[in-house]
Picture 1 (cartoon, rainbow, N blue to C red):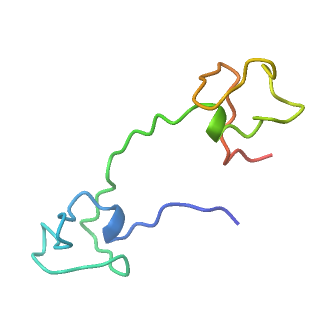
Picture 2: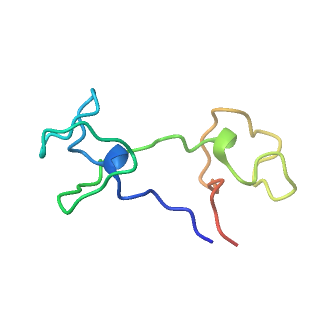
Length: 82
């Protein structure tokens, strides 16, 4: 089973910081969704040894240099599928 972000209010760009929908003007939570749902755009730049599937394993491309916070061109995300 794949894990995905839900198309609900908690992931919608129309949700204000106080939990009110900017489109409908009502208080909502993560149980709600609607036809005007717009996914929040978010960049995540946590590509380093801490988040690498190969860190501290025999598959690590740089076992002598690998360390928390280090960036690597052989980086493999934790959520990689085999």
